[in-house]
Image 1 (cartoon, rainbow, N blue to C red):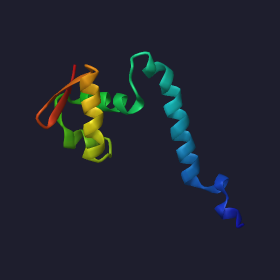
Image 2 (cartoon, one colour):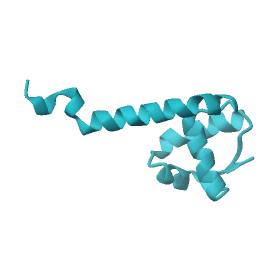
Image 3 (spheres, rainbow, N blue to C red):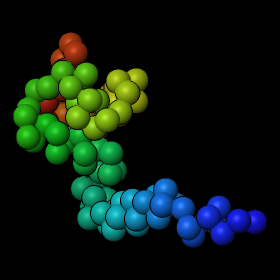
Image 4 (cartoon, rainbow, N blue to C red):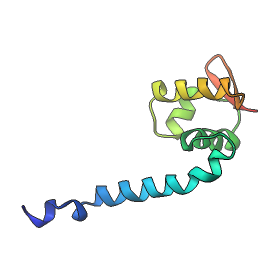
Length: 91
């Protein structure tokens, strides 16, 4: 196998590992509040500018709307935010 193709030589693997470890570091703090890391990111977006359209939240998080919508629905069921037609606002 060529050295350049080894897992430890892949920048993408290093970035993936760093991202996973950072997310794990947040877990104990967020779990105290019943939040997941993606929910925390949504709240950060809404804290910057409340009552945003779903499309804007998705764009800010670099996600697809069909990924964000179920997340917002779960957050509303948990009482974390309020959704209205096409937008969401933190409580």
